[in-house]
Length: 221
Image 1 (spheres, rainbow, N blue to C red):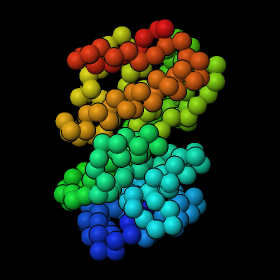
Image 2 (cartoon, one colour):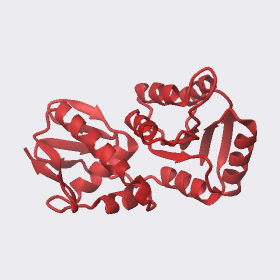
Image 3 (cartoon, rainbow, N blue to C red):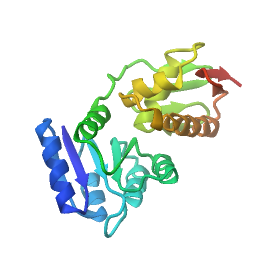
C-alpha cells in the first residue's frame, strides 16, 4: 500500500513514516502542500495524509484541489487543529478522516488501514426509486449524475443494501470508518448532510431520513 505523507515538520514526518513502514506501508514524504498536490496529480496512492499548516499550499487547499480534480483517493487530515469547525471544514471539502496531534501510533495505523480497506466493489448497479448507484464509478444518477467521495459511497451503499431498515449512527461509524469513537460520531451526520444535498442536486425522488436516537434510512419523497 502506497501512502503519500505531506508534513512540513521533518521530525514528525520521519516518525510517522517509520510507524507506517513498520506496518507494511510504502510511505512517500513531501514537505509542502504544492509538492503534495503535484505528486497526487501524477501518481496513484492508496491513501494521503495531509497536515494543515504547510508552506506554499495549506492542507485544506491541497484537499480542495485534489477533490476538484475528481481524485477520490482516501485522505486523512493529520493536524494540531482540533476545533470542531476545522474538522467539519475538512470533511466538507472531502476528507475521509481527521486525526488531531498528538496521536497514538496504534490509532494512526488503525485509521490508515481503515482508509485503505476498500470494500469489494460490486458490478451490480443499486437502485431505489429513480436513484441509481454505480459501485464501479462511485456515481449516483437520477435526472443528473454526480460522483461520490469514498465515504459517501460506502454510506449510501449500506443504506441501499438495507432498504426499509434503519441503520444506527454507531453501525454506520463502525462499518464505514472501521473503528468506534464516540467523540467522532458527528462525522456521520456531516456526511449524511452532504449526501442529502447531492441527492437533491441530481433530482432524486428520495432522501435520507433521520429518526432521532434510532438511525437513518432511505425514504421516498
